[in-house]
Image (cartoon, rainbow, N blue to C red; front, side, top):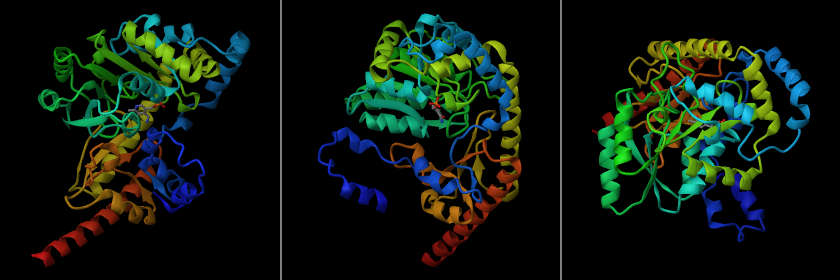
Length: 419
Ligand code: PMP
């Protein structure tokens, strides 16, 4: 707890009234960074922000005018709890790009996919339930699972995604220990934070294991269309309609500002998701949904996704080139899409302890421990290359190298002395 949080707590006359659950709400390691790293002199490789400036203003301006002329009053009004049917139909087309065939009946619009994940977790997770997840896994999902007091069991993940053998082993181990596994949570493409994609060969194997053990699969896929060279393998949902809940989002392929995401779920789960959505928010933003719907009808949205791909490919290249130039001895993932590199530091260097030194050198990243529920990941860090310019990425990684090299030298000196 920071000093100012402690101070706020001391002043809080309601501190004895909160639900026990409220204690799980910690400031995320990513959030805590935002105030420092938003200073212009700091190169932030930390927060996973899309480069929204690559979207021409006129495109949204035209969508706004078109939408207001056609559905202006509806856009200002409450809508259905499941979301706008016109947009749901367009989402079917979007998902078809990853091999998914679906009915608009089975799609629920949410306030970003973060909200979908929260609703789903509220439906499934009781205290002590197990969620299986990649190691490392998305920090925002871990925060939700923690809030519902679930235990996250990380499953070994390599450059081809989650290992089916390790998954089978983790399931057996959890079952033997008498634990209840509620679902497997996967970011299948260009994962946050690892940048890794689950290989085509492993996809049916993961599904087969989950089917055999009756474990629901939650497929979170906000980055799949942001591939650099070749499209990603077909979605898990395209191979299993009953056993997979699929989460999608407009945050990365358009903008996060509308806060619109979607869930495709088997009918029984879908019904509960609609009720949960209505209970939490009555309905998703009509304005946001209709803006996106108009944009999908009239703008060259596929061309715009190509533009985003080009921007992020150039930045990925800048990040990898800078890593090769300034930190050639460090292991890093090589993503084929998305926003992130996952870097392994020499054993003994703690990326969280190193962060204030890095910020002093005017560069920021996200420490590896943020992406594990079990406190591991000390010698890992996430580099997000989506937001800074290629020039700044290079400068940032050069600064990072200065900090890491100094830490490595210090570590070597101390280890020598200790011998
Ligand atoms: N899942 C993953 C893997 C993410 O990286 C993010 C955003 N960083 C989300 C879900 C949430 O996205 P949104 O709520 O903006 O749709």
